[in-house]
Image (cartoon, rainbow, N blue to C red; front, side, top):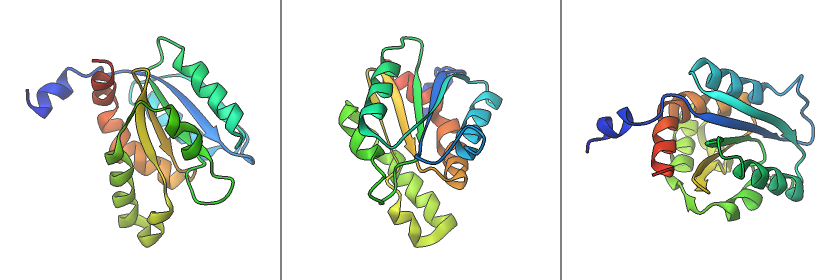
Length: 167
């Protein structure tokens, strides 16, 4: 079966959760979280859950495990905590939960970022994977990064990723 045939069988609408991981953001100034939710909704996807979590391992793990138990949820997108500062713990917290890693997501994200911001792209630890048949995508917290990931990677492939993760 060709790539196009696979894509045609993918769901056109998926159910998503959006988590912003930040010690400083509020709902009023969470530009990346708002942008991700808007782009999902405008593309016909359902945002079932949104929350801002502190950079705390226990609260992030607890929320991810809670979301993984929700049967109708298909995708979890996080924003923030993927850099190199001592407070950036998203990778260390979520990566061990993944059953399969999608290494190409982070690689492609950094390649596209390099084209926009140059060598600073090496400091991004954006990553993705699958846990309990749900796609988990972890993005940097900047609006530019969220916009890039949504437009160039996530929205073109989200249905296809869900189809493959649930087969």
